[in-house]
Each structure stands twice: as structure tokens, then as C-alpha cells.
Length: 172
Image 1 (tube, rainbow, N blue to C red):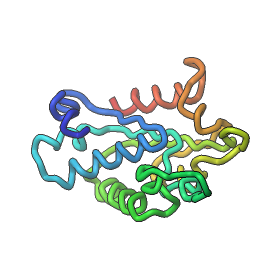
Image 2: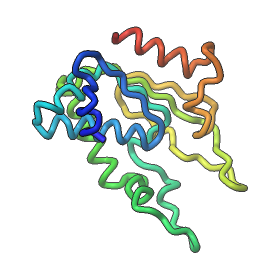
Image 3: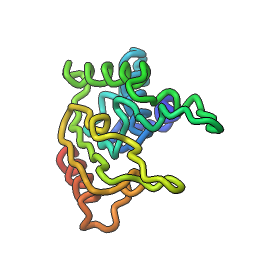
């Protein structure tokens, strides 16, 4: 993904506000960390032009739901990577936070946290816990929305939309 973004010149001439929902937020963190750690000059615009990161219910410390190992359920590699407190998510968060706190990654961070349960078949479950969705960086706002609705503004008057536009206007 990073090479594709580099090929398209992302961040070369314009600031970037990264927006991610759920595991998409982990992908953003991975792209930013990898582009910094690679030392590749062509990857530099990916992190250097970053001005904002907007997280919609991202499992920064994993998800309890991903840890469920029930009979007849075959878990994918992608799911086991985001188990609660997995080495992958904790290490990625440590590296991302280190870039932020060291001042190399100069971004505004805003996170929305789901507080409603999500209907999955016949059960209501919490997909990303409040403790995991709070990255410990920037602003955090909990909303009584489920995992599917937390990233879908209903109108331009919705707080989900207004806060994103506010962040974009602030950093650009």
C-alpha cells in the first residue's frame, strides 16, 4: 500500500489527513511507522506531510472479540493479529506513539470511540473496547454508536462529520 501511495505522489505537494476505521487505523499507523523507519527518501512525504490522524473506533490495543476461539469458528491471521494485547498491536502502538512524542510525527490526533454494542447475528457485542479505542494521544470522544455506525456521518450536521472537517480545517 505504501508503495502505491508513493507512486501516486501522496504527500509530495499537499498536507495529508489520514482517516481510518477499525483495522484501517492500524494500517495508517503501520504506513506512517514503516515510512519513517525505512529511511527511504521516497517514503518521507507519507509521514512528513501528515498533519492529522482521525481514528474511528480503532483497536489500538486489540479487541477481546478477536480473541474468542469458539468451536466451528476458524479465525483468520488478520483476526489473530488484533487479539487483545497482541504483540503486533502493542508494538505498533508503541512505535507510533514514540514517533508522535519524539516530535517526528507532527499530527493532530482525534479519536471517536463506540460506546454502543454491535448486533452480530443474534448477539450484541462490543467490537472495540473503550480502553483500546483511546490511543492516549490527542482528543477522544465517545459516542453512543455501534462499530458499524461510528464511521458513517448521517449528515453534515453530525458530530462525526463536523469533527473531521474541523480537524482538516485546523491543520490545513
